[in-house]
Length: 187
Image (cartoon, rainbow, N blue to C red):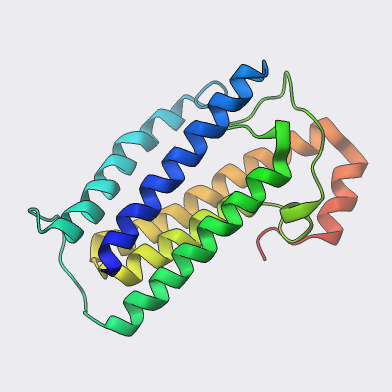
């Protein structure tokens, strides 16, 4: 059961991002800026597809990549709880973002600096939500390859956050610096 929830979590996150980007496109906002400032962003989709396959294979008994490190039903349900919290925090972040939601950096049309809602709890609630989901999926699947994804994911999130922080500092200056003093990077 928990492995099906892991698959459903990933599918739900994809649907939420696509749906929100489509809504904003109707309003004339180009929400997907993926790969426009950093061409290395295009390395992410193949790795996500492999991750998605590993989770699906684990749930549906398909040939798997990697092996289970352990099986623990309690750990699986803790993983489910982390996935649910991650999805709810992600939704809260998207609502808090409003029309300012973007996938990738957009220095040409940045929108307002969002500091309320989920952004009053974390400067990076979307990455925090993704981190919770990644950790939850690992606890559900207990696959060593997924554990590597957790480590690499945290590294990539930090890399992207640092790029975004430089951009936000350039765009919003002292206002952003003051925000950084009040609110933590994650939680």
